[in-house]
Image (cartoon, rainbow, N blue to C red; front, side, top):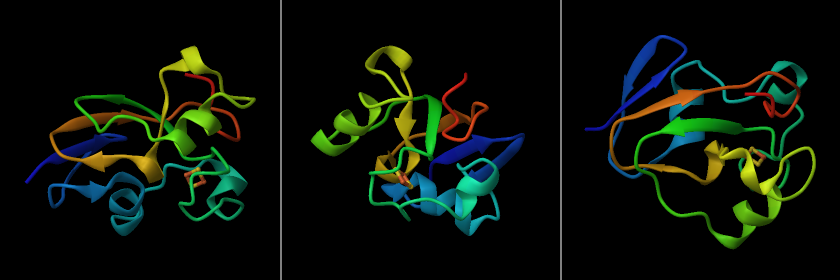
Length: 104
Ligand code: FES
């Protein structure tokens, strides 16, 4: 089982688990402030679940690429949308500041 490290906690999950759901199921959130309620619930459209990931992850699908090329995000940020990431191997996850977590 892969391990997700986030905010000093280590969470084990099933291989292929959705990163956003894994965090939420463990009382953690990839969202900041009011974005915890004002988000697209994992549809990949709001961009508020953006995180920085160290580890091997699935390639971006078209929707994630589109959202991460749309302000306040930009292509070169290196961020990923937690709701679009599957956990296949151990990873370290970091959340930036700002409504979208865009400031890493
Ligand atoms: S929850 Fe909206 S893009 Fe991930």
